[in-house]
Image (cartoon, one colour):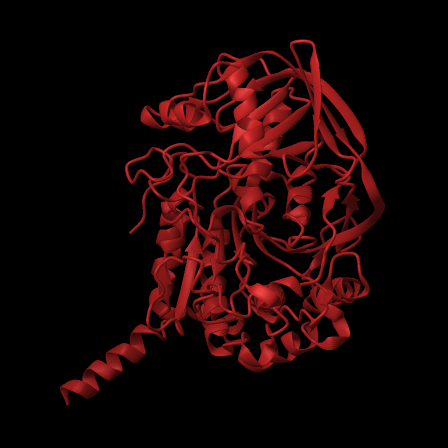
Length: 537
């Protein structure tokens, strides 16, 4: 009798969906998700590579689903926000760095100096070392304090200070939002730099990245499609970047009478900036592009207007990305989990909110981004050209890979500890910046019953915080969290196919997002961002 009573209590605990939300909640069903994802990851879409036919089909399908759900077009009278892209190939044989020092001139090429830029250009200037390239006012840390980068070429370390120190102000052994090199280039632009040179931080404990991953996969790695880089034609980085070898970087430090290891040690010990100008050295950076084309992809965005005449001006965002890696030597990169799962999730939630009779007070923007696989380009374009004001955007729920059970990718690549059973597990990445956000999700999860993990926020080896489309929103002080079920051996392989998707878990994840998103959009106090990330357990 006691066992039966406990069984009844458990049923009641996980069935307390508010009646006013029941219609939308119940509309999220595995059969619909499977039907949509079977199409989106089918051979017909050819891997949805950016700027190719399959991605164009995906764009039109998402727009049609938003229209069927009754969402308002968010880009004027259209669901499509053009994202101007440049696809290019560097000419490594001609892209060069020239050092002028003491009347001597010497030119270096890859791998000593590997340039990346979508335009052909030559920039010249003096060199300043700007530490890790970070400006973090809430942490009282600014590598640009006391130096003038205007019109100069900036040299910076990868990563961030004290990354192996559990007591670091930079989120212990996890990452903060400042560790990403793309954001560092944008920061250098804001300080007037004409170019950025990045180098390995010499004291960093080197380790592989499971998802960056693609490393260590042997012959299969060699058969991945060769995908040319893309860049934003507007709204992204606008200065060239060069990656320097350790020997090349050490030469520049020597001109200032310093060594990289000693300088990093000084920064890490405090932590405090140790930036300086490199005397007697001028550089010419020359980029040459062997192939270049400009074309538009599209973010797809639909709006559900809030029910409150005042609060409808505020916005909650549900997002994902639709692009993947196209076709390679081994066949079609289907991208069922990455990120067909997130795309059909946003579509399912658009239908769920539209079908529910009760509408939240704030507006909800459903957006599926372009060119995430090329560097979060659609999301970066959106925050540079927002369809809804960022100042009144209160929270973002971003889905990227929500359809599988986490599993080891490669024995040679370290991953955070993986639970014995991940079939009911969901990772939340970035809640250490918003305890309010986390509290809301955890409270609603009492209805859904997922196993939530925050392990990614305690680990810097995978650098997960800035590897999906929530990151540009976080850089604009918006509580933004990546919902993620983890890496697996089929990540970025032709074997990422629909029959491996755990649709029952997907339903639970999307129902949790539905409940949490409704509360974000309807509650009196939406989530707040805390500048100093809290550690999570």
